Each structure stands twice: as structure tokens, then as C-alpha cells.
Image (cartoon, rainbow, N blue to C red; front, side):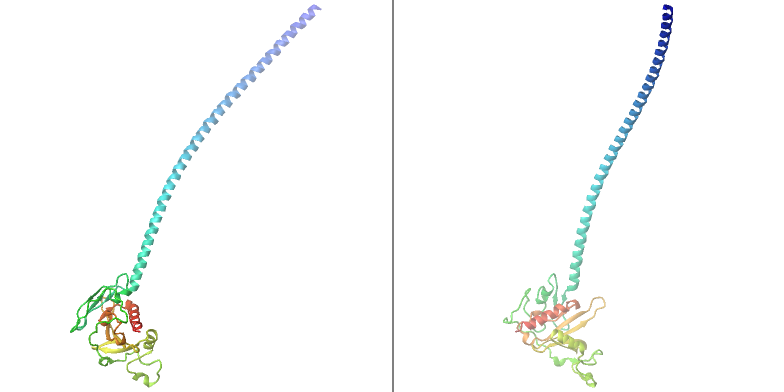
Length: 297
């Protein structure tokens, strides 16, 4: 029996050794695999970390570049805003200058007075206040033949009670020869053959001017020149306007006073002289004439 037990024990010991050897080999294989796995994981982690660092660095660079670009864009925007404000300011200045020039162009370049065949010359320069120029502002006055006028003060407003110097002898309206121009063939109130026999000549346009200004207008001949004669019947004020055409300059109108009538005391000095002015100042001229007529009361 003892021999059997010894044999069995030997066999058991042998099997146990083999089993332990197999387990040890298996453990070694598993350990080797685990080590390989750990090494691979560490390599992968290191790669991911390096890639992450690279990407972070790239992101930081992009952020820095974006910040610098944003700063540059902000600076550029500020510069553009400054340029826009400067352009708007220049445009506003140019617009104001254009409006000022247009206003000056509408108001005219000024009144000019000239001496014509022995009469006095009066030069009126119109500045910023054009309508006030007709009242005697900035006037250079020369002596009339055979009679002198007192110097004119700037911006003089005459009251109805003030006594003005008596002007020179006025030419008689009878010395004018009324001529019927080609455009004035018929009167608004007359038809038939009698329309061509009107003296002084009169047409629908003269009626319109009379309705607008309260003055009668006629075409007359003065010194072999055609001119317009204006008459305010209630006051007796009458004057003539002669058109002068220059080839190089704009046409001008020559004002000559014929009679002041009841406006003698209130008429400003310029109405007593010969005045030359441009067509653009016609509205101001007639405004001043009508004002003088109204001041006689």
C-alpha cells in the first residue's frame, strides 16, 4: 500500500508542477500582454497630449491673430468714421457755400449807376443786404450838371415829414414820342380797327403789369431809343427804363426819373438820379418804388 501511495504522490507532484508551470506561463503571457497594452496606451496618451498641446497652441495663435485683426479692424473703422465725419463736414460746408452762392446769384451781383449824356452817375454795390442797397447804402455820387446834391448817408430811411433837396428840372413827358411795337397790336378792352390807333401804345401785357404793380406802362422813344415809361396816376410818379445790351456782359436797365409827383418829400436820393441795375434786381427795384409810393401818405 505504501508503494501505491508513493507512486500516487509522485504522480500528483508531477501533475501539480506541470499545472503550476502552465499557470506561470499563462501569467507571464498575460503580464506581457498587459505591459504591451500599457505601453501602447501610454504612447497613445502621449500622442493625444502632444496633439492637444499643439491644438491649444494653434488655438491660442488663432485667438491672438483674431484679436490683432479685431484691433486692426477697430482702428480702421475709427479711421473710416473720422474720414466719414470729415467728408460730411466738407459736404455740409460745400452745401452751405452752394446755397450762399445760389442766394447771391438770385439776389444779383449788384446795382450799378452810370452817367449817360450829362446826367449824374451813381454806383450801388450790393453786399450781404441787397434790398437795403437801394436806400443809399455804399453810394458814390457825382455832381449833376448845373446842380449838386448833398452826400448820401448809408442806410437812410426818410420819413414823410422830412424835407428832401429838390431834384433837377424834370424832363416833360410831352418830349417823348410814343411808339407802338410790333407785339402791341390790340388792347384787351378794344377790338376792331380802333385797337391799332391807341396812343400811347398799349397791349394786354401792359394791362397785366398795371394790375400787378398799380402803374401804367408805355413804350416811348427817348433820344431815338425805345424805352419803357411807367406812371403811377394817383401819386404822379413817373420814370423810364431803358434796356442796354452788351455783347460781353448781361443786359442792364437804366432808370431815369421823370417826375416824383407827391412822392417828392419821401422819395430816397437814388430815385432822383440815374441808376443802372441788372435784370435780377428788378423785383427789388419795384419793391422799393412801391414802398416809396406807400410812404407818401
